[in-house]
Length: 400
Ligand SMILES: Nc1ncnc2c1ncn2[C@@H]1O[C@H](COP(=O)(O)OP(=O)(O)OP(=O)(O)O)[C@@H](O)[C@H]1O
Ligand SMILES: [Mg+2]
Image (tube, rainbow, N blue to C red; front, side):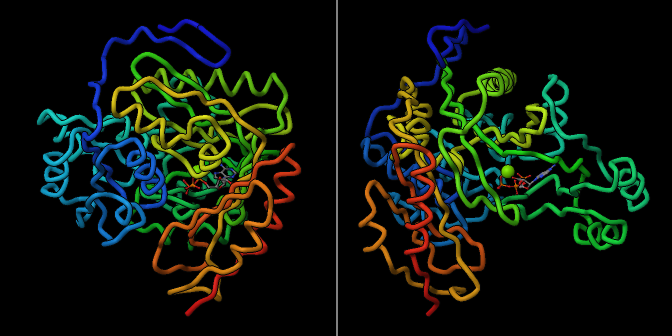
């Protein structure tokens, strides 16, 4: 049960309190990527200790944390070691072991968000099934068990579909767009042995997302943002999204419904398609800070990363207010910079007013691998977008 208290804030009647943790308490983070790194920066700023678990030594988050446990995401003893050394555990990546997280909870360790939430979300098919059950608009989708089924469903979806793996997808890896019959068999074979489902290909006019933060007493929304993808990889985010009040209201209502159904605490990002008729369709939910929320570091009063620190430590939420319109551009590896690389051009970038650069400390790159991002504030979103384009062009990655 919730009641409206201010423009974007609801007061919740939930009484399942999160224990308050004060510095120098220790937070455990599963996953050592860039999202974890930005979380660690915020936690360290506030005086907390952080231990990261990731299989790659010296991971982007591990470099800036107090300690990294180098172990795989299925290593039970490593999860328990992390739990024993920390006061609360969170994650920055959903492709980890939800069953082990559940055993941690059963042994009395605190995990935020819970293993239950992760379990529902990390299986894209189950996630969509849950969304459909609660009445949220999602693309038509259906499980696929063999090539005949795939062929029939493709026909039913007017020969425009996307085949998705239920587990482990990110940056479009795990998705194959199919637009003709001859692509069916090779696409199906690419996923041999994996759980897959087919989904209607949405003809959208915009992709947008919203970060929602929720603790035991409040829920708040960040601004809705516009996302531009190429090859299924996020290229840029523009803030705030240029949408009508009617569409914004539908997004807020749907997002509130989703986080109330999840009935958990954390930072959640919900991705939407907006179609020609201004209908909104949910693509997916992430139960953690999101690439499309990087802009909150410089663009908002409280970043999505600080919010997660506050939430896991039982503190009140910070303001999600947008200071100024902004644009975020991802810095991606390219064909020439494969392997070890260096970054130049920061001097030109920093000559652009209100331009901020983040480089994640990844030792090597690959074509289209995310190695950093730029956030630019502007008087208008169009100005921020233009300045950001110039800033991105000034960055050069050189392979060694
Ligand atoms: N049903 C669909 N119709 C049209 N485009 C789609 C559909 N599903 C996915 N896409 C496109 O592919 C992109 C990536 O898809 P999705 O979000 O499912 O994958 P992901 O690997 O989890 O991506 P990410 O890690 O970037 O969130 C979407 O942002 C969208 O541009
Ligand atoms: Mg996505």
